[in-house]
Image (cartoon, rainbow, N blue to C red; front, side, top):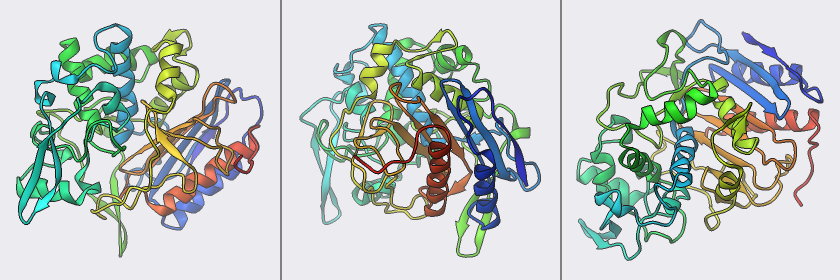
Length: 403
């Protein structure tokens, strides 16, 4: 089953038939039970279509509600940068002044037998470091030492909505050192709430979602009648699994707690690609966004998963140097598919992905949504690459070899 696609006022036509076929073939081959893709450039929506079903019967659509997981991070980063613009916090201010829990963080350096080796951090945790994944915060599924510490101390998982997940977890390296992907954006969400005196969901709704018309997005599921079911890839094939984040959590996860639709996220990305203002609504100043989009970390290598039920090893752009901006990952060379230098990209744990080119070329943006675990599924990444090739070949940004 293929969902209807649309093509609005785009300068050069995307081959919608090709993308339709790619998505349909992926479902037929068992890559996923359902998928939806959307693309746009400065002139409007370029492609909107899907294949398969979201729940075993209803087709995916652009307003299907899905768990966006770590795609939450880019949205929360924008909210943090709004506070920077307002002078409420500086990018390099020690966050211990806002979050006493981060005034004296501990760094886990390993183990001596069964004893964790903890020491005080020598450098402060700052907003810039949290946003660029250089704060030292980690994820247990990417750090065997942190996974061991969480298990030994019965620290709840990030999906349980417990503040203890964050405050009881040590750093895994010195703040300001090498990049490590982790729970830093959860600290950012807590800081936003403390700075503004408003809960994070209200802050995001009033300053990002409502202004942009993102009516499907929130930490609570907007409409269960449009919710996509979660599946897992197992040795026996794709299996539907029960999955839902707590709807009344103690602590909403700014690093991965949002639900939303492909349509809403594409709107958010169009604002990013347009320089912070979309259809007359300014979310961030162009200067703030330009600073946020540049590189703020050293090179990011392959992330090795220690929990295959959560994620495969993560390398979204193999062979292309990447770093962290303040909004997501960025490529430092043009990719083999012609992705411009500085294009933002990131993803969510249920195999949702995005890219957002800079303003200098076509300002193209795209999302690809599934609800499939574990993350970084190789077949879904192949599908993403095939869709990107179709978009860039047939919409004016021709495929080129890396410079």
